Image (cartoon, rainbow over the protein chains, first blue to last red):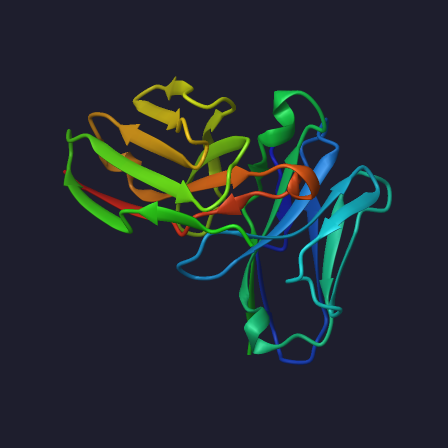
Length: 116
Length: 113
């Protein structure tokens, strides 16, 4: 399977704990995106990388959130001191960085986070 | 942020019927995309549109990029039960927002056999 993969698929944590999610993009894609989706809503943009560089961050990405893509391949999204409002599906997507493929973002299956 | 209004919110149709849904924006977009999402999964890209007025098909799906660049439409012909899911429109702007997609709230489609 050469699609976007995410790990874990589900995470239950207690309020105040830290969690980390991983995303592996499609191998030839150099752009990687993180989105958050809550029930009844469309995905909301959090941040994106081109190779190792983090090029844009949403105001939704509070200082408790940090994303990295150290070698320009996989990425991690960490949430520190989780709050109940962080409960959501966290989606990763990837795309090419040029041509028409730049605009076609392919999503992984998501990580469902539940904060109790 | 840029608002996308997607309608209808939900549709209940009989197998074999055609479906139409649309999406409007308060801002101009350079690219429109349509995705389908099933429970517990990520969105799957169906169609991408790049030019105002463009009409693109993918099997029984046809989508159009509105002339004003502020709207897009998706039609599904001869619906089948596996068309069930949530359909999202997404738009991509220009300049500093080039990387991000803005999504509508989705159209929930139910198909009765």
